[in-house]
Image (cartoon, rainbow, N blue to C red; front, side, top):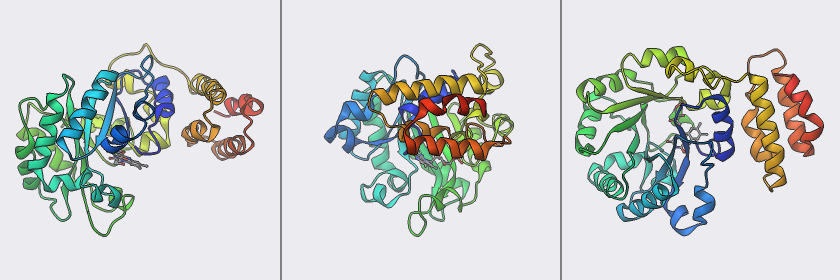
Length: 309
Ligand SMILES: Cc1cc2nc3c(=O)[nH]c(=O)nc-3n(C[C@H](O)[C@H](O)[C@H](O)COP(=O)(O)O)c2cc1C
């Protein structure tokens, strides 16, 4: 998620769940090939695995080069964004508008697969504009699927390419989970991961009766601790459980250390506004966090913050 799942946020989530796959923000091929590639792609290999990088682009040759770079850097999965409806992305002719050109999309996927041994996955919508019927999705997948494709992640809404902002495109088109379920039925060998509007682990468990995986976006970002039972409930692994206090303490110490390395508190502390969501003093905690960012003084407030969760 852009502006959200950066290297710091992924550090936080790894303190909470060891097993969930974490995804980077979308990084465009242009930013990798013409920008500061190392800065864009840096991840913390000692803690982040399994971690997937999400690429945005529509030029097979450029996607191939970026896939190779990311693969060599040690990511575990390369994901292609075919779901973002923003105007900026549409101007670059990638994101959700690639659903309109399955021929080009297939070429992109093939070029990426040929550049790596890693899984190349695609994150798409159930359709675009008014194409919300199941048949559209099935037809689309039939056009892009190939022997090497293992996994599709599907945001269970259409993307409306004209007239809605990206934010509205995450809220207004209705969720049609049944289209994703049906797809799994039609493609039993394909790993199908469902996304969109999933609020908690109970809902995850319900979806997992129909599909192979679930992806959480906003619910997890806004309230990271809802993922605290992911390892035990979804992966049957109990070894990594830490309390909310322990997690916050480690993360705040990380923020201090990052600050010494030049990363402002605004970039690291912004990820923990939801760390005590729903608790009595959530408002007080958020106010103190904001004050800490503004005054640039975490050392003073660290014990107080920890005591509030
Ligand atoms: C701030 C923000 C940034 C996002 N950035 C991306 C992105 O870079 N790539 C992507 O595939 N989806 C992105 N999304 C969409 C989410 O991944 C997800 O598909 C969508 O929010 C629906 O899932 P949710 O209801 O669990 O949040 C973003 C969503 C938000 C709120």
